Amino acid sequence: MASIVENRGVAVLLCLVLVSSVEVSDGAVYKVGDSAGWTTIGNVDYKQWAVDKTFQLGDIIVFEYNPQFHNVMQVRHAEYRACNVSSPISTHTTGNDSITIDTHGHHFFVCGVPGHCQAGQKVDINILRAPSVAPSPSGLASPVPAVAAVPAPSPSAAMDVVFDKFGWLVLILQLLYMFGLA
Image 1 (cartoon, helix red, strand yellow):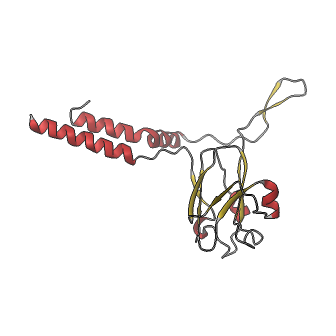
Image 2 (spheres, one colour):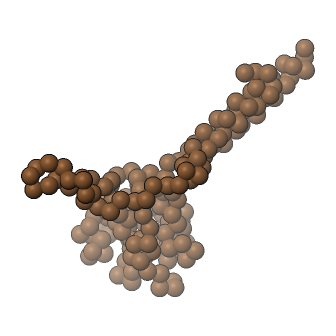
Image 3 (cartoon, rainbow, N blue to C red):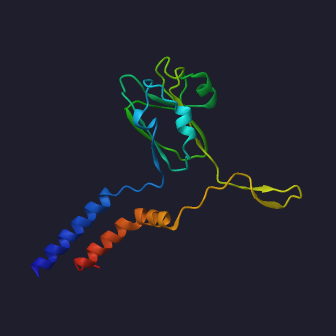
């Protein structure tokens, strides 16, 4: 009898550890500048880097840099174009900043160190809206989408998403069953 209670206690403890270590995220993670990171060294083309990505709501944008020499400031469009950092929306200075994008539209980031933005250390993260149906001249909806549709993920990719979201739950339920707690 004591071993059953002991096993149940171990199972519950193991399940709590597993649940507490799970991090759920709906979005992809993008490291700005890929292996180069957020820097002025190496002539990183952040505009080209961003153009090659399809950002979506929930994506996490990671800025990795040496905080002694750089920072990250989120600014408005006019400030982005002019490299004006006098009134940023937000400022990040850790050297490993993760920013979750939770609204559609453009998100402008620059380095606030003098001369860095002008040297190209700035990036525009654009979250496109979902494709919409364009109205026809008669006022009725046209079957032609206003924006090119993104191809649907393959069934195996869809299953990967399901497992990523619920795989840990299945594991916990299996452990509970194995230890006779379910």
